[in-house]
Image: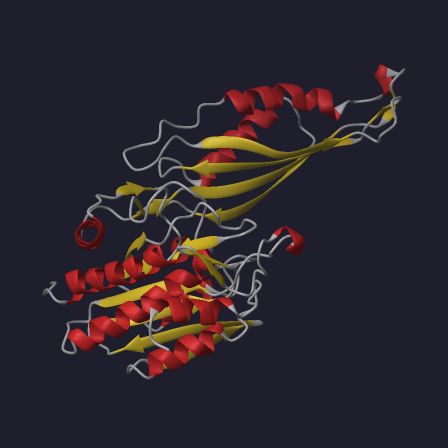
Amino acid sequence: MSNTLDLAIALLKKQSLTPQDAGCMDLMAEYLEQRGFNIEWMNFGDTRNLWARRGNATPLFCFAGHTDVVPTGPLDQWDTPPFEPTIKGDLLYARGAADMKGSLAAMLTACDSFIQQHADHNGSIAFLITSDEEGTALDGTVKVMHALNKRNEKIDFCIVGEPSSHKIFGDMVRVGRRGSINGYLKLIGKQGHVAYPELVENPIHRLAPILSLLTAEKWDEGNDHFPPTHFQISNLNSGTGATNVVPGHADMAFNLRFSSELTPAEIKRRITYIIDQHSDNYELTWALSGLPFITEKGTLTNAVEKAVHEVTGISPVLSTGGGISDGRFIAPSGAQLIELGPINETIHKINECVSVKDLDTLSITYCKVLENILLVSIE
Ligand SMILES: [Zn+2]
């Protein structure tokens, strides 16, 4: 088994519903071990992570990704079974085809052809692979990075194989991600009969001006790398179901996707200030999903832009859009990090698919990036 398509199919047959790996990493580890990689299993909780490194020299170039996939959704809506990879025309259908087992296969074959052609390259190559990305992401990349930092093993350049392309392969590369923070507000009132307003305190009425302030707030202007921060309410609940009862509390969950102009502390301060103007009886809790990060133009972005252009003729847009990724755990270590992968149109959907041709193109592009980084001397 050597080509990208074969490897992708072998990975896609394994039912690695998050946080399960279902043997995907064993397949990858075996492939890498045969090519001189040192295999290290980093297990945290029930999660198994693979750290494979070939050589000890610097700079260290790392491919990062995940073997877990999101649930299939209703099986009867799939045209072909999600764990029986099926090719129709140029498209390979299976859960995880685009997100991101196709990329994992392309990383493996890219390494293989790079090592075969340039056995005496500079630096070293590593793989950081987890099966805890689509779920809680508590025992995956974040813990591996912690362990690597502790022993001073530093990643200089990293490509995450998330499907970054929009309309055609290579049209978009992610160079950063916005931050994401969730807030949970419980506004407390006093329950009672609607006919006795003097005996109740309606939390929905209290919430109304808060909502209008929060939704009208201009959080920042964004900057060269990031669009302006925006606020969205995801859940709003109150009421007992009865028409003659004022409820005792109103609950709201909200999210901010934020630029590097804001910090979580500043967001918390501003939102608390708004709520304080209209209520002194509430509970507010927070969950930070990720800080914003950005890889400035430099060695890696140049290498990637050049590789994509050489292989496809396209000049990719460097973007910070989209959701969060495991890049948020790797970038803070100081690594230059970008995300490059296939078209993301069908990810997480019924009938997820990837272009077979794009898998080969991706492998060639990854190989070119390795050449652009590890065949030139870098101080
Ligand atoms: Zn993914």
